[in-house]
Length: 365
Image 1 (cartoon, rainbow, N blue to C red):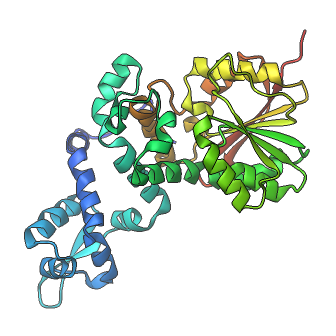
Image 2 (image 1 turned 120 degrees about the vertical axis):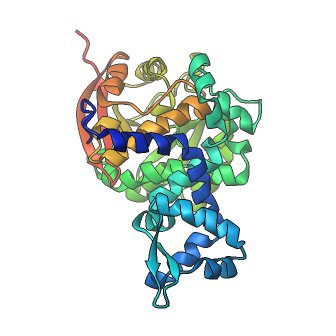
Image 3 (image 1 turned 90 degrees about the vertical axis):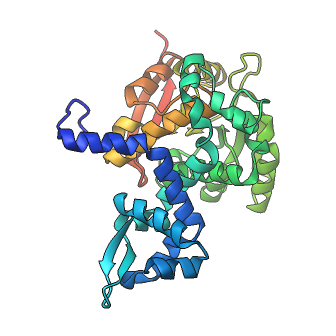
């Protein structure tokens, strides 16, 4: 992890980093153009031989001018590098950063999410901070207060990028989370914010006895039914439409375990406490409450913390204007205020270092 208390960068390097920030919208779009026009792929396919500007233009149908301006900025970004051909020609070769932009799943998911969901709306980040509302969401229409209400109505490309981003991170931790949750197998498990039923399906495949109730907004109903039936678990996965923030809409009772995966980061800390207070009223002292979250101060690598910190900006300008990716103490404090105590914490689950927190009701004194 980065030591955020230090500022050891040299002045010349700091100035260069500042220029990268100043021009970052243009460099982001340059990479998008290199990908979408096929230039990056053709250069990658050429291997160590690389391509001249003329060869890249001929193979992609892009003008010499277009290849030139995009490839030149890609050199400064170290997405591409130069090599001299045997005949002295200047050839473009894929750099290490370019490889990750083309081939790394995490980078691809993040890039598409930023482009298709966040890019235009990020212009309204300052106004979102001022107002406490996701002002950038208006790029998709004026009808919604949060992006969750809008999901079923998003353009297909944006919807695909949103769900791929959402599932990529939490899904990676599922194989390690399952044996923890089912060490003492719950017969009835409530999945709050279950989205498209991916966790519910994993649970039913892992334990033939468990029944899962997905508690989510009504707009998710169709996807849940379709996916549960397709997986062969339509008889064990049911739905309970509910707005988690509506105090007049209580959660059902009867759960042996309650599961929330990458759900609470969709709410402010006060809202987290309010949701857990509703859960508190519906569960018994023996009910296990599981919270799976990527906590940015529990990450192994600086890059992972950076991704989570930038994801907070998505929540600010696009999702709801009030939530973020939390630190461990922030989230646990909000949950404990609702009358729960932390039983155990499992950190470092999956390649993205998720934390699985297990709570129970505090004992009455």
